[in-house]
Image 1 (cartoon, rainbow, N blue to C red):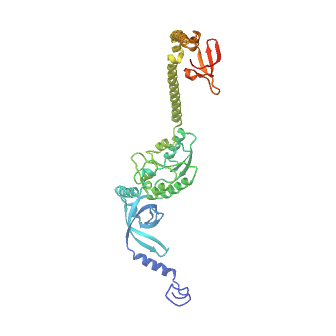
Image 2: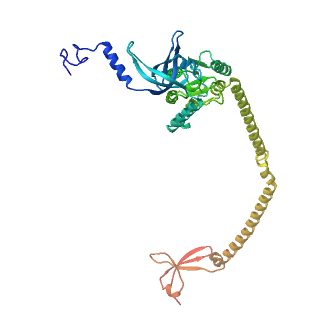
Image 3: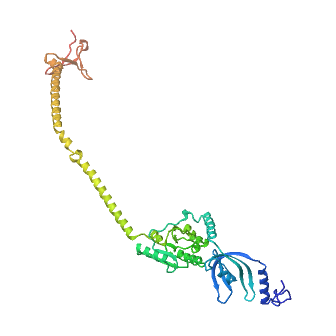
Length: 415
């Protein structure tokens, strides 16, 4: 590069700068070489000036915060086969151009085609398959809706029937419910950015327990923002449960599939989010009645069981069996005593007989008949019964026991 202040090519130094016209002409030449292109987008702003033959259009990319300025002949818009208005999805054919007089870029359009319903539906179907493949519709990712939300975040159009229906039905079912309402446009090119901003604000609010995205029914073009990829991904990123209440039963935008709960109508959303006070009170009353009846039945059943147990003879008269056996026990006791007495008499007689026989056969009786027991009395030791004459030589001391006592004697030897 040439040093500042040195001579060189135009525009390469402060001493040899390009004039404005030089830059503008060169930029116009570069852009002119781009050639004509087909571009698809959504009309964000359409301006038809009364005294101008040129229409000015701002074409927006629904999936990004980007836009292009278009210019075209007035008749191209006025004579279009479909009405051109803000929010219309179109495909244009034009040549990029740079206006040197104002230094602005635009696309000079020579043909405009409105995207048909079939093409819109096909595009939505392709996006549906893409999001489904990424798992955004997986039921396992659905967040549970709280039973009784304290604050409901509501995203809807200003003074819309959807807002009136949700607030009226929810307040009628649970008067204490509160709302955090965010008004946005619900169709057209500005709908998606506003709805996404409102969704982020409500999701960041810790007081909001559930978010409802509500809109009345409409055509496919009217509901197109609710099938926008940016909005669907934002719903999937929310940490607060999101309820989709878009349109009526036949309407099925893609946000219905991403949301945690899909309601057929705004009224249905209010009914499914907020419990009915009267119905819940009736349910509590019914449950209390049923529990009280069940408790009474259980008490009566158990009381009947206890009554049956108490009515049994063993419980009502526990000593009846013993009383019934009293006579039998008395007779048994008498018989036992009689048998014992008889046994004692028999055994007493037997003992007496044995005693008499023992007395008759004993030594005392023999001694009483004149017999005597002679014992030798040694100098040491116990006396021994004299059984032989040889055992008592002369001089042996003897002890003679008779019936009434004992005497001592001395042996004189055998004869």
